[in-house]
Length: 69
Image (cartoon, rainbow, N blue to C red):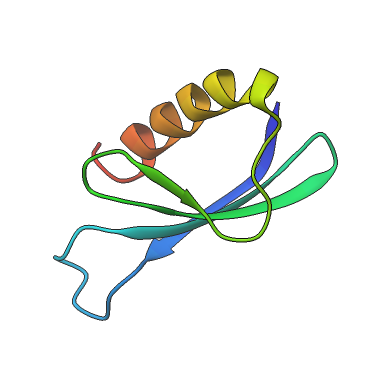
């Protein structure tokens, strides 16, 4: 489960798409850039391969709720 999910615009012009996201997953901090096309660019740590698909799905849902709603 993702906890402490945070997002902020990547650019000063908030109309430009792109967001910096951070969250905890399995007690580990992850940071990434969420691009307008839905690609996730991991900054420090890449999630384990077995969790990546589920994690990407959870992030997409959170971004749809927080940014596009």
